[in-house]
Amino acid sequence: MDSEGSSPPFFDREKHVVFLQMMNRLLPLDYQAQEINRLTLAYFAISGLHILGALDQAHPRNDTELNRQFFGFHGSRSSQFPRDDNGALIHNGSHLASTYCALAILKIIGYNFSCINSKSILTSMRNLQQSDGSFMPTHVGAEADLRFVFCAAAICSMLENWSGMDKEKAKEYILNCQSYDGGFGLIPGSESHAVSGTGGATYCAVASLQLMGFIEDDILSKSSSSSFINVQLLLDWSLQRQAADGGFQGRANKASDTCYAFWVGGVLRILGAYKFIDEKALRRFLLTCQSRYGGFSKFPGQLPDIYHSYYGFSAFSMLEEPGLIPICVELGIADIAAIGH
Image 1 (cartoon, rainbow, N blue to C red):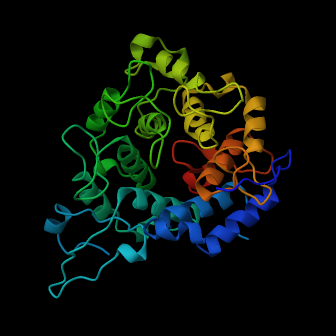
Image 2: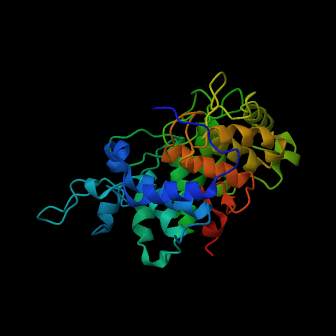
Image 3: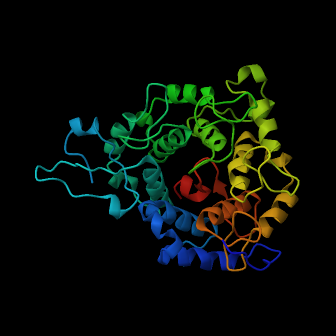
């Protein structure tokens, strides 16, 4: 991606609002290949506008079907297909990540969740949980890892109904993903990291445990023997991700990147350890990634994209930037939306 000129030395809220409004009105050319993820892109735009304080500028036929397919939300209208002549859904593209994004958007705009067929979502979602406690994102042909455990936990939390998953099995899967260095991999035995694909493995683990009620209040003050995860190692690993330039890296020996300020910072916030980071240094790094056009880029000097922009806004919310709405870290939306007011 081409580089751009220097950005202003302050958080330029007005340009960020314009950037997100543009993204919300028209899908840019570079994103057209991701049309299948339109709902996720909408989540970044709408939730971003909410954090900036600028939000105002197919169901199953019977219970048997619920055991065969997942009845959530599609990522795009292009992934929806009509029923066959017998009324059956032959191609069901419902996806856990798309369902999380859809419910998050509906939370943000204050939609009445009693109008949603939550039973269909939760009953069919439970069938996506595997024997080891992990989740597949759709009913056929997909990987199972921590990202979708988080999506399932967030969906249950937003619907205020935990019948869609076995929390104890999910907890055991998460514990099996903690590595020797304290971080979490996407699957048991994999390398610890803060980001992969659609979400950070360590963030997904910790946020899921928080949503399910397994993270104790003031966990840092508790004895290590009382915690089922190695909190001290997790804390050390997370704090070591802040690099010399003030930004956060996803793994050891990797470059700092805007989105890690949320993925790692969010973990530290949930643990009650955000006070241990160098906030001034992080702010300086993030401002080097701020675009003069609005939005944030992955690395300093590059053009902005909506993914890194959203997590840049989220990071500044955690840094308590004036004018921004506080974020509910474990759900990835503004606090005010999470509590339903």
